[in-house]
Amino acid sequence: MSDGSITFSTALDNRQLEKELAAFKKKITKKEQDISVLRTKLASGKKKSAFDAAELDAEKAKLQEIKDRLADIRAMSKDKGLNPERREEAKALIPSVEEELRDQRT
Image (cartoon, rainbow, N blue to C red):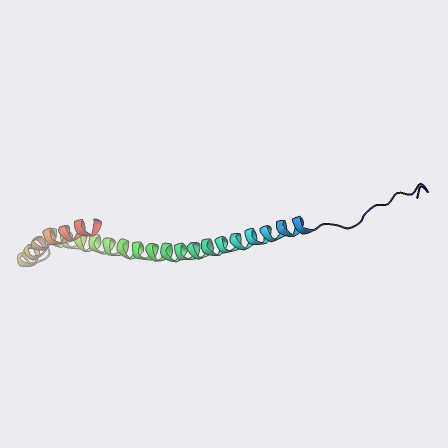
C-alpha cells in the first residue's frame, strides 16, 4: 500500500485525565469541609465575642454605679446640713464601699 496516504489514530486515552479529575474532586471536597469547619469556628467566635462584650459592659456599669455611690457617700459625710449622726453613718460606709470598688476593678 504505497499510495502515499498517512493514517492517524484518533483513539484517546483518558485514563490519566480521569485520575487527575478524581484527585481534584477529592481536594475540592476536602477544602469544602475545611471551609465549613472554619465557618463554624468563626460563628462560634463571633458569638463568644458578643457575649464577652456584653459581660464587660455589665461589669463596667457596676463599676460606675459603685463609683457614683461612693461619691454620694463622701458628699454626705461632708455635708454640714445633715445631722451629725447621718454624717458619721456615711463616714462609716466609706471603707466598705471603697473595698467593693477595689474588688470590682479587679
